[in-house]
Image 1 (cartoon, rainbow, N blue to C red):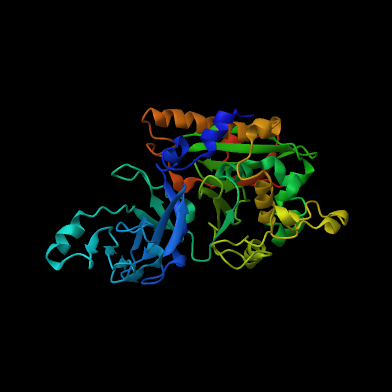
Image 2: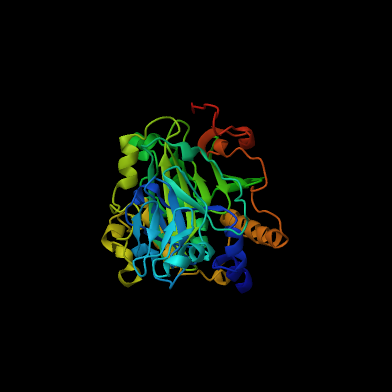
Length: 422
């Protein structure tokens, strides 16, 4: 249980807040690269309680500015996108893709160039990787290192989708860290891999033991967590997750199978963007996996769960289905179950009312690490791996079954041992 003051500092993300300033130290996922096209319509982007505009210039580069035109604050989402810049439709001021005002038609010709050169524009460094546009919103003149994850080099067959959720980012992040709910909330929905291999999927063991034991290894970027389930046949089912602060949860999958990475990003204090990267390090994503991830979802990859309902209709929960045996009564894609639970807590969950148990060890740890990082950041220190030398390409989660007595810390997720029960 957190105090009200701790809950406040962890959930408020706007400019000048402690959490907001620390999160701005990191490269942040902003939008899909495919959502903007050269000389196409600019896109409004809201991140960390601020409004921005993103666009792809004539030469393919991406520009990222404050949404408000520096002249009279009209929205640059309305601007003309042409000749490698945005031209505001209000007075025709043009800002090139590098963030410089290059034309002010409303000024006298003799002072136009000099005046334009003095106009400040808040623009931000961007990078493209893994089908996404990433932006650095911090105050440092030189952006920090970019976390070059394995999924940034995923083939074109990878699935990159977003769900916009009415709930604070911490609710979404904690929901992705919670291995204990897997065998309950999702017990009637299909876990990754099960669609293709039926009862042979290791995910079935999450229901065989719904109270895992947790062990941790702290890393420069966060921690590695093992949810360990002892099975009746003398083996251990381990879901070894990688958590990379502040946004990333690497969801365990079996060796040789596709992987899921969930990235929860604050839109503002009460809304969050849940990015789902579904890729296969071993080859193309099989059709069965692709169908499973897309089944029951909306077609808009920028907000694929917009049809989930809300509190006024209890998120379309089907009580008849529950009586017939479906656990949650949420008859859509399994990710909807997570989103609906998070929204049901309210826009910002009141964590002073929680009563935590042993299964919440990972939640307690994550909160404490975030609070400690805020203290270090207040002292001028870089948080979570920004000043380290970790090899982010080697970060991969793993679901594996092994004999008791095996030390999970000795298992390499990129090259795990093979074990087949007798």
